[in-house]
Length: 195
View 1 (cartoon, rainbow, N blue to C red):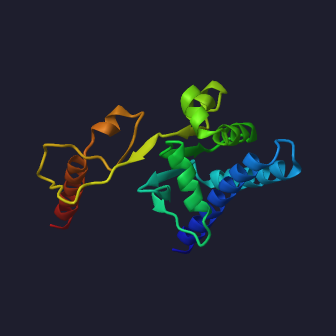
View 2 (view 1 turned 120 degrees about the horizontal axis):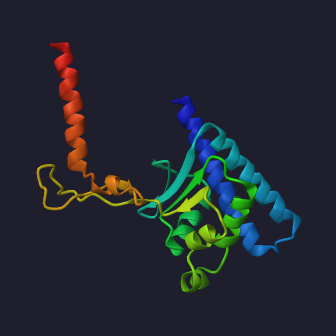
């Protein structure tokens, strides 16, 4: 439990630092010393986290920030502001991969601070990152959908997926019903072991 709490605090710090880097970069000229300091600091926090983890996915669900599926709440407003910034840019998730370079991170920050209206008219941020050769930061790979309260496991009229990788067609075909059957099968096998 202590490790999970430490990880959550570290993730909150990373989100706060990314949001701060975005805000500072959007206010000060690119060559201002505070910009380089904040970007380097936020990059180091992210890179250090990714030494132990292969990815960090920051996503939106109902206007709230999730980090690797864990809801993120903080006493300050930075995560809330970050959620609003992502929502304004139609970004539902950002996945940072181990090995992200400072160059890729700076490219990401620069793409994010563009006026959201000009981005949507010309090219979206994801396309901008791809065009600049950034492969360690990907946008909108994961999306969350709310499962209706009246969903019944035996109702097969509409497949429901809580979260999935948009680039994995096999994952998009799995429904909660199919996953539940898998878990039930595993539990049945476990029960048989005790007989």
